Image (cartoon, rainbow, N blue to C red):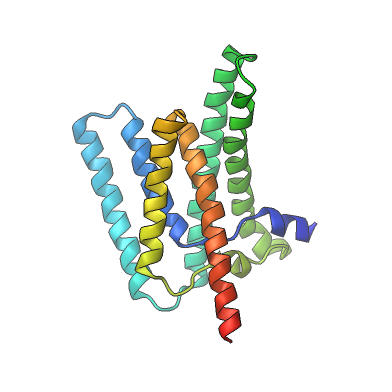
Length: 201
């Protein structure tokens, strides 16, 4: 059971918090806010983003509490995004259940994101009570590079544009697509970094 849970829960690098910031801003832009409300939301997000970046690039050692913060923010963001998108898209499918087989394949994104969000939140309970999944093994806070954050930001923007104009996804489904691909890309990138470090040692 422990190995199954450990394999299902993705590894996270702190760059994923940047993805969440960008997606919250993207989601806010889709809401029916007026100009003043949007300005307040974006300025608040910008302030939080600056505070977080200062912490990331100034602090040398990241505490266990900071890793718990990454788990909490990431888990909540994935669960809420996946749950909301699954509900919205489920009603779209019900309206035309035999329209296309592709619409059922697209349902994978919100369901997978919601499941990963739930599992990420479970890490905190498992780590403190059952000791089934090690928090330290799932959250990677290696020395940050500016290029890593720029790459993740660009990848997120490209994916949003791809979903919006090429696949023509609804915005909520697009959020789940971006989270899914970013998790895969970040995990793969992180794995390559760790392998290089091991080879050097």
